[in-house]
Length: 198
Image (cartoon, rainbow, N blue to C red; front, side, top):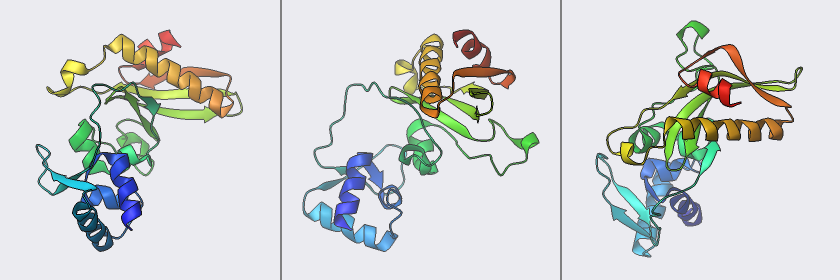
């Protein structure tokens, strides 16, 4: 248990009991015990995160980078987005899978992927692999809006679109699709700029 929680803490950097348990879908009581043991060993340190109303721990020796160059489309079960409360508190993104929501009530689409660029979740896209045509279809593309704290380091819209287009091309190649196509009736404020960039 200690080793699993240690790995979880290193992956998260900072996390609550729920965050650290959720990474490997561990039982809460055992995770709490492992956290206490890791604190005693000096491998986790209790910290405070502004706006969080619960205990939080930092992996000892965790580096806080000045910036990160990450770029990825995240599936709904990626550890970064799976714990929805953490996602909302750290990135300001309210995210849900809408596959069980009736089509008329969907906000962003059927199977939406958040787009990570640098240290921000800057967009979300609903994609479909049309195997018969060999095309990765973009059914919707929405920009996220930064909060006041994130606005200083938020990338410009043209940078988001260019990077998202490149990441979609990478995904298309990975899927064996020949092209990325933004559907004519694609929804979202990024659909037209993405169509022009693709």
